[in-house]
Length: 219
Image (tube, rainbow, N blue to C red; front, side):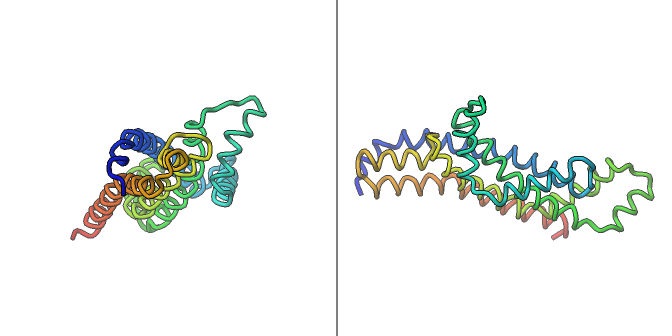
């Protein structure tokens, strides 16, 4: 292990880590919003968009992210729509993540007992009040493990974005291996960079899950 070389390329990995973080965080936020919207549309059977949401989920979950990225980066310019690699990465990850988030939220919403919905309506709550004050808090609490797993999944899937020339962690690693042939050192830095991102996220998700269980069960 050449520690001098590792020290010399640390700035490149630092910037690549920031790019990966930025790409992942934007995509996670958008995926959560898309997933919540789709779960509401499907669970409440909103006419006109329910079928579209179902088709979106099936298409997203059953096509590889790499193919989606190639369509965005190489296919859309043929239609006159040009996007940079980072934007294509965000759209691709959000498109993929939104479908998984939708299933997580859907399971949480469907787990709320019907008796609670009937009780809320009987005391005069509107459908909007019932959703925001009764359904959504419980659905979020139940969905936290699945949402957290999807967040970690999206961070790891961000490595695929290197295929469209976004200078994130895997792109820098392959570039350095190709130029300097320092495979061991480059892969070591790659692993450590992902651990720096993923371990704190994993601990935060575990803490949120613990707090949601404690709030639900009072333990």
